[in-house]
Length: 220
Image (cartoon, rainbow, N blue to C red; front, side):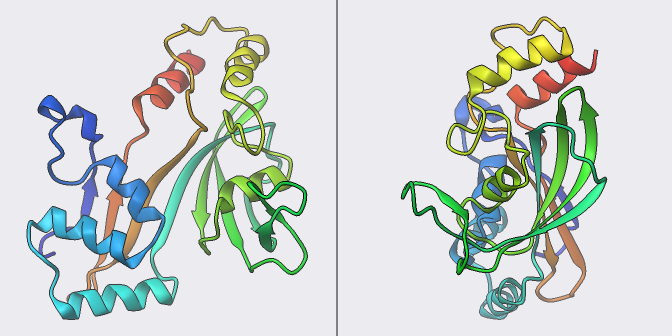
């Protein structure tokens, strides 16, 4: 891990013939789910060798102490009033729909922080900090406060509704090839301390092309 400070990750699809070399944004999504095994797997791939036991112990301690910072980008429906906010609401299985999670009494403690990054008519781009790591936490919390993630078929707007509403609200022509085929939630940054030196490290994953192109179109 020596020499790693801030690392910008590139999508795996951008590598020649789809070769999966180094760290890609797909790996960051897995890593941001925050299992120790996922973290070690990604770093082992980056280093091309297994992590030393001391490094593994340090990273495991940081994970358990919630010192690993996970930041997402989320495009949500509506105008989020506060520039900065924190959602603290317990999450558990939705009693009316077992495939979904929900904010429920007696659920597991869950905390999500957010900051407004950019505003559009009828939509807001947020930077979201995952303090705890419950199943579907960001999606559930944002739906709970009335700002479901764009394109989220399980907790809010569907991809087709997102495309149609952006055309109507923003009065822009959106090419049919530039739309969301998934919900607009992206694992953007992952930060932790170097397990030996203690220096801060950060991995950054750019927006996926479909979301990046869509936002560029809307900004015009």
